[in-house]
Image (cartoon, rainbow, N blue to C red; front, side):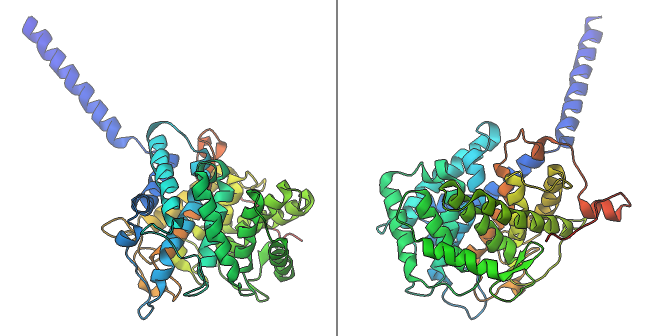
Length: 409
């Protein structure tokens, strides 16, 4: 009798173990944790290396054949663009569990890394001048935008000495005259940062950028990149997000009317509507224009409107989450996206040197992080907590009802 009881006990334990193992295998990672894991994977090599003053030592410089000057710019590119994208998550993400551990590590590395980037005695001191070309204006602006997006954690947690060195570095970029196109927003963003932190700021640079873009507005939520219309994603890479962040800073400090800021953001809402409709059921999208190597940076405006809870009424936050997750998986899981040491490689869907334009190098690629701005929403927000929703093209091509599209005037 005792032997039978013992055998039954062994069998029950074995069965329980089998059930637990099956449950563990089939348990799905949440979409939010997937985003956290991917963000950490993208950011860790850059920020950990920079925190140890080893970014220039460890980061490869992949570039177009025949291009030889990117070493002067690529490190600031990686730092500014990466932080610009992950700033909202560092500012207000979850503090517990695996996500909390990831955020804490990236935040600590970022703060130490920013110091090393602006400390003239550091091996990783970065170029903010026009000595080798005008590129530093671009990525100083992305770093400034990161501070606008994370005023407490990224900026407020820096010691006063580091803050002073950041301001000194940014002031060097005033010697750079931006071309008359989207680059005007780089100068404007740096000046908006100065306004935000109480430094002397040049309102003329902001006014010029906003006035010119008003002249270049083509209608239906789209700006020209300069006087001409460019059929690319620069409204999402640069123009719309920087106009939104700059106008927000101006409105907070009563340098722009709230109505004017609202009018500007309505254009971004419209543009986000279009972006959502571009995402196919399998997570692909039209391969239009230049800078395709920025990957899901093409959807920065959509992610930004989700973060700001300014999606139009006919687009549910959950459908944006599902659409962006499909894009992220399609692009970032492609073979060759990362090299053996975890650094991004040039390409759109994998390693594709054909998209390496002469201004593209390894550091440039980290603008992909801006497609994940919505990670700054808390886990309790409906963007993360609501059940999965089909996005527009999924509805259309599966025969479901969907909202027809209308231009704005």
